[in-house]
Amino acid sequence: MIDQTKLPTELLYVKYTDYNDVAYAIKNLIVRGAPAIGVSGAFGLALAALQSNATTKEQLLADLEKARKILHDTRPTAVNLSWGLEQIMNVANKGNTVQEIKDLIVTTAKQMAEDDIKINMTMGKNGSELFSNNDTIMTHCNAGSLATVAYGTALGVIRATKESGKNIKVIATETRPVQQGSRLTAFELKHDGFDVSLIPDTAVGYSMANKLVNKVVVGADRVLRTGHVYNKIGTYQVALMAKQHGIPFYVAAPLSTFDMKSTPDDVIIEQRKGTEVTQIGDRKTAPDGIHVINPAFDMTPPELISGIITEAGVAKPPFDETIPKLFEAKK
Ligand code: MRU
Image (cartoon, rainbow, N blue to C red; front, side, top):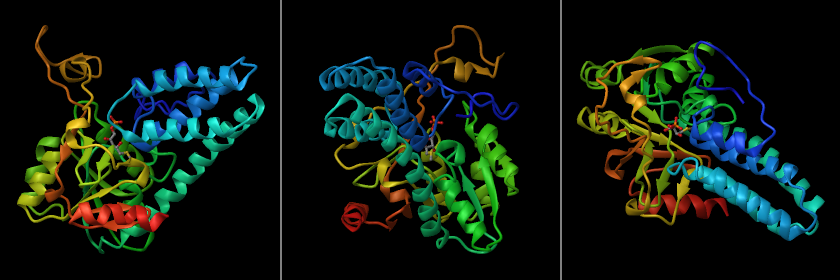
């Protein structure tokens, strides 16, 4: 995988053979983005299977369960991580012999990676129909190739819109504190030849009020059946300002990002270390000993969302009716 903490100054690929290192990579944002950590979790379990010296199915399942917990406990908000781990555990339970289980797990993890790209391309196509020639599209955080196996969710929609022949511009928010917008989205889109402008998060209102942007698309870490969307901190503010200015606000997320069981009370918002806020890179930007509140995600309520783009189609409000239909259509 690419070590995303080094971008945009260094494009460094890292290789892991121990699932504990994959867990470390997820926790420390070496790999981040909901679909990317879902598939990384699956590959982490594949490594755990290969690392195991078990001679019976029971021993192997116990080794896998230990690894599943370590991988799972790295980040609590993106549901794709538990989804990816669950897919592998289900497959493991179906195998009969140790070798058969190991083979099944490795094949499934590879298949999940391939499926992620196909899903993103289908989602991109579905979403591209919501965008027009000469649109300027704002996005927050990074929901691109770097946040998935390839192509991206929100950036996949932007890619597919451009590939359909429409002329578009993109505005990327910086996304403090970890700057996924400036370090990753701006890097990724510039690298791929998009007309992209970077703004500080504080310029979202200005950009909307001055008609510099006419649509928004973001990714998601978890979508509830009611249409409550959990995404990078600051998404809620962008959605509220879009509503104020009559700008359509779209979310792009694969069905693996949907959590059809939880209610907003159940969702844990990850709180990250204060140094992400008191420093920019290694440079101190706040007084020593200051108390910091650093939530990594926020919740955007359904009434601020114009549509949720998936590989099974676009859900429009009322979401509590249209989201369950996406899953029925998939059956
Ligand atoms: O903390 P991060 O960088 O993992 O947060 C990522 C986001 O919030 C993305 O918008 C989300 O995972 C969607 S990625 C396709």
